Length: 455
Image (cartoon, rainbow, N blue to C red; front, side, top):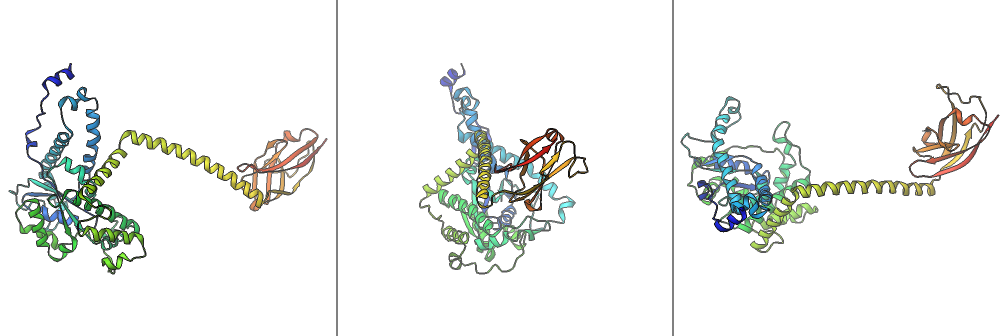
């Protein structure tokens, strides 16, 4: 009945009134240690922009919504989203409005808590969440560097968003990351060199692809050197890009140094010198840097190719988070673990065979070789009789076998001496007992020697 009704009377869903205007948050993207934080704070001094240093949940939500829409509309008109006629774009837009509402409703509380006595000592007047009570702060700026990887889904969440990419020399970033622990006492661990360069390259490539794909009206690139040379011009460019009038307070954060690593001169940071570096990760990073400075990405020729690369990366990441993918990965991990265990067992057997060829196990001597029923020999503190064997090339897994029974064996002196207590019942009848030495892992077995039991 529901499907019939929707076919006859379906109309475009009525979204909340607040959805009528596109949201226009600002995202500062780029590598870590590239002044993303201070630039966020700089724009956050504007009376109409509220600073959010790092959110982290927004990009995750932007990815997860793709799967949520699929399961919410998977049954067509018999599912809620299908019956509501809610398109994917509308679905994202509703959640974008909710996130904006969350920021706006939390703003006063954040300002109040930041003004408490326990925060005052750590904040300079150059960094203020609101410089005047009457500041409207209708927009917000988010400085989460990881957003660099998620420009495509974030634009679904916030169609009017603007992105500012801060591009810094990779050697300077890598050197800073390699001295990360100097930021503060007990700070984050230092990166290894290749890890530092690879981290820079991953974030910058994503940001540069977004710049190519969405163009200069959506993504503005700022060279980090411009911030150092002329922060006022940078502020003017950023505010003009996001459509806000210039406010001189936005230059104040650039007067302070925040979260800075302490290290010596990193050396020659020129593109020319580092393109000839003996390290591939350095050459690759500077090849990307040289291209990104002119708005390009190596191996990507057109905006369409850049868009497809971003969409493909989004799809791969989104698919990796699906429950079905997680179950497949769990099953595959179990299968590979079992396969690895079997290969290790096989490898141990092959190693045993090789050892048997190169260093064969051999019984040199043993004792006693004759015993009498009821008479103890080599008496141990436990009251048991013990057998000893001199051997060559016995490993830690060597076991004495007597009369078809494995004895609890102690391997000593680098495999040259084996000892074992002999159960009394093995010596209860006259006769001969075959004696072997074997490796319980490789299966190598030598003997028999004979232990004679006299009546």
